[in-house]
Image (cartoon, rainbow, N blue to C red; front, side, top):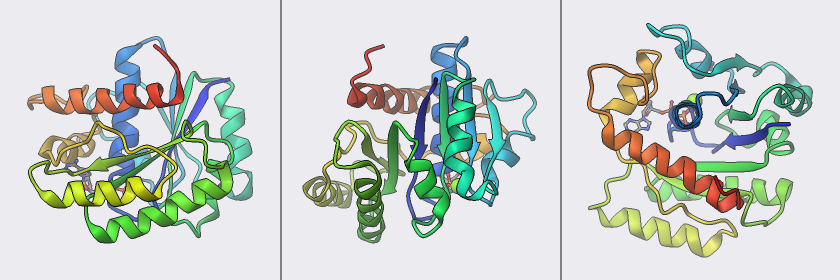
Length: 221
Ligand SMILES: Nc1ncnc2c1ncn2[C@@H]1O[C@H](COP(=O)(O)OP(=O)(O)O)[C@@H](O)[C@H]1O
Ligand SMILES: [Mg+2]
């Protein structure tokens, strides 16, 4: 039975889809024999659509299950039997039952957020949902800052506020604002496969997040 990692936040545009696909790229790159599945649980279908546009297919499978309804969790568990790792790109709402259904079967939840005070509010709502469905186990959820400009003070302020309130850790690894994250997905690629662009730093950032998540879960490589 493969592990299930959910990437969730009720706010749209925080990078759920970008991070899900690039984490799938990172784990596939790290171990090319790993069977990795991306489940698109968002009816906007961004993950699913991007998987059709690349020159080369992704080194992982993408499937859309946004319409699975109440059976979504069960369906993901069933699929996880055939994969080593399942990454779920969740829809942007905590009211959407899809997110709750996914959390029920997730081994780990990654909550991406950008470092603005309004994002902190929506993230607190997401943290509460994880707490209610999964419990306060600090090995089961983590918060990652995306689109970070580390030189700006607001990032540290928001990070402190979130850390105080959350039973779950804020990852030390952060993801910067980089053009390549935007463009790669449009080409149906991840930063591990996109051609003709400088990807070294982006690859390093995503790999750091992927490995730190395993560390939080207590899985040594
Ligand atoms: N670190 C980043 N740097 C640059 N652009 C980013 C970054 N993260 C996300 N984006 C862009 O921001 C937009 C929203 O990201 P997306 O992954 O679709 O968010 P969500 O799935 O949470 O709605 C997309 O255009 C995406 O390419
Ligand atoms: Mg999305």
